[in-house]
Image (cartoon, rainbow, N blue to C red; front, side, top):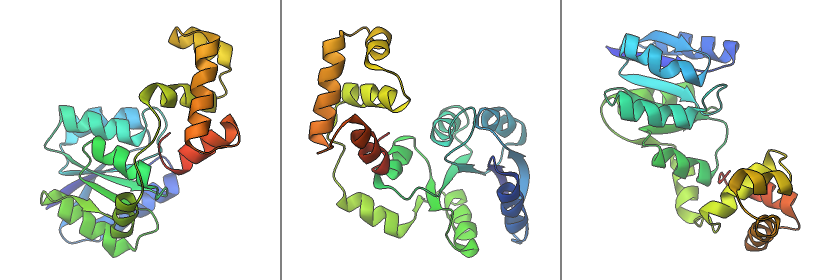
Length: 201
């Protein structure tokens, strides 16, 4: 029997996932949570074989929680559920050592098969997403450019970014200009959109 934990913040979706997996003869949902910061403590209590984790969770996001689970409780394998089928998101998930990555609009049988595959020790990734990740290029931005752009995306102005990162205002503006240029963006707002669409932010 495969013991599964569900981490999903939308109550109706979480209920549907629980009902769906409980119908499988070889699975049982032993725990469910609605926020990322509950994943590790609940997983430590129930020791599930597989944690099915929504990528967008309140508290701690799904990828951060999955990485934490991999480090602190490596016997629990992680399967990320997302509606964001972006190559950059998949690369971030793989960097977080997730065992599987499935789109939310996949057929129900695909989810059950993914849970079985992950429980058996295989890495399970949506095939169309894997192909698009293979075809897409790496992020052209440096770590610092991404950091500055992420703060700008949150609405932080250049003065505050400079203070927070201990940089001069001119340096912050240079990073933002450089990021926009590398992404062929019209301005920083367009650069944020391009980076988000690619899954880099």
